[in-house]
Image 1 (spheres, rainbow, N blue to C red):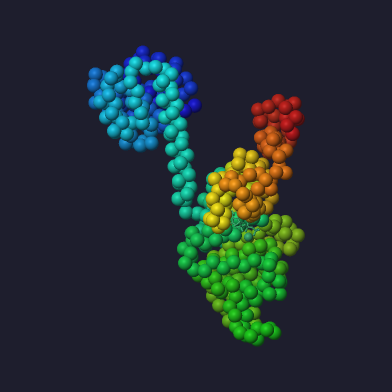
Image 2: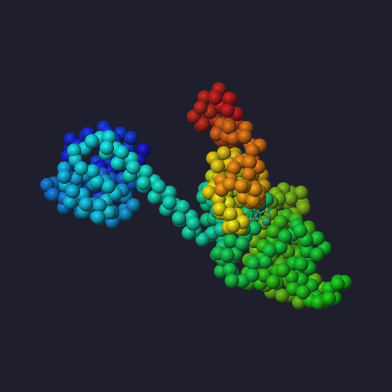
Length: 437
Ligand SMILES: Nc1ncnc2c1ncn2[C@@H]1O[C@H](COP(=O)(O)OP(=O)(O)OP(=O)(O)O)[C@@H](O)[C@H]1O
Ligand SMILES: [Mg+2]
């Protein structure tokens, strides 16, 4: 229940309001000092304030002073001033000082309730807007407000200033590339190069010379001495993408480089010192690869000084719409088209889809929808997500069931599989637990 502070010295009116305003958690204060201490303690979004307060109950001076102090402590607080009958001048004065609204006695319960409800409504809209603005000002290209992505953002802020080697783990399309760049951007190396190399896309025999460079004549075709990517990144950040695909023999050489911070070009003898920060990424399970001996254990520990797990989009459903809107705006600019947004069904379909290809898949869907759409409103058909209709109708049910199953399996694990304890732990009966699992 929302807290509502009622500043009123008349006990009779206090009682009347207590009954009327039972949708709110009402806190009463009879004078200025208790009003201010309640404001500090409960931070109500809305306050009703009787202007005639003791010691000057006949006039408005104490009431107006209270109003000023409330607003100086919390400028977003919506104060509804309650004045004596026909006391227009003080009402006007209060509005000038920043009161949200005024109401003249005698109090009509229904009217006052409408005014209070509206004040809460305005306050909630303002809070929403402020949140959105704060997000827009946030200096990161990483969109999302889910707790999981907020945690990733805060980890980025913490690791960026350090020299620790960071490993980004996440499914394809979750933003590993974007995050690697962001770590560089937020580091003291951001004026120096960010060099990315995709270990999976370069043929094994070329990867070594690509990374370490080569001397003229080192092999057929090596016509001139060429520095490798590591050297090129000097002073900046080297992003080793898809590190899980690094050939086993080369892993030893990389490890040596990580330990000694020097490179030797292929066919060369000189040791060239380099100062770089390393960020690695993979969508493979490196631990399993270590067990299977396809990834060196020592290298694994060396690159995973900090590990950032990037959650797949299906685990942060609350980010889907905000990302969709942002992507649609980008497409609109690109195509010089104007869109008003997504239809209700389109939004429901976006939310219901499980996005196995994560943000890249979302990006593709929105791009093609933006191209295809003949109207300003993107529809389910435009998105090509109409196959999810069935899922849509039951999406709340499905979500609930999924969440229940997850909670049950976690609780079972926590209780070592003991059914009675699990039921107790979950606050349900055993039969319900059987039903849920
Ligand atoms: N949180 C986010 N906010 C905004 N855009 C994002 C976000 N995450 C990813 N993207 C965008 O989605 C696309 C895919 O992200 P990215 O290339 O970083 O993923 P990836 O994890 O490196 O994928 P892959 O494993 O396939 O290489 C990019 O265009 C990226 O800018
Ligand atoms: Mg990538």
